[in-house]
Length: 270
Image (cartoon, rainbow, N blue to C red):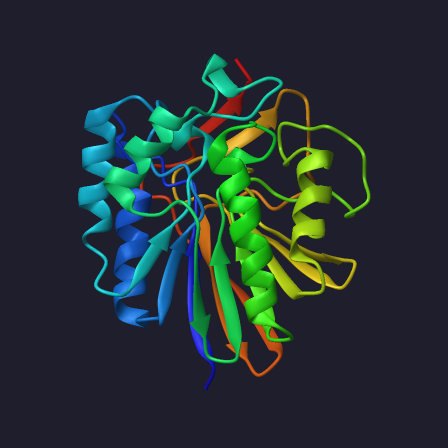
């Protein structure tokens, strides 16, 4: 048996979001029974506002119900969003990042996972010009060197692309084209095999450039339309299980039945 990892995303937990806690409770029950080697939450841990201290306290307490090892990476609702059009006008700042780190720990990290290396990144730093962005690029280049030819799996919030690694479209659904190019350059000759993200509240699996792309659905709520952008993913609540075995990876969608009926939002950039 290989390394078993489960991904949850877009939990949107907070003092004023009891509906989202229902989906999270279902996920926690499943994960505590499955007992994977690691659970990764790919961001938007809190309800909406990166400056809401009450939401951070609630979200952190609810994660404490997991009885298995877990790690997180930040989403735009946790540390602010990237330019040029940050959600709600709240851009990433070092102050917001430090509040995240004080509650959750490092915003980028790596660990050995059997034959693989698993890393979590702060994709909201891409293109910010913050000192932390340069620090993360330097760290990532070092990680690529240390990983050598071991298969590498990356987990972060915003998808790397919509269709292919060489697309030029700027979309609120993905990291910027410049951020994507710089990420791939920083990895150098690393054996990148898997990129797993959230943000879109949809499930989708496909490959580009030999890299398996996986979008995890949200545990919280569905999104009908993103400012007119449609991604073609599967709209449902759920999480994703992985098994990393040798140089292979298997992916399994785990739907979560909503206890409160359909709850759908239309996301807008501001």
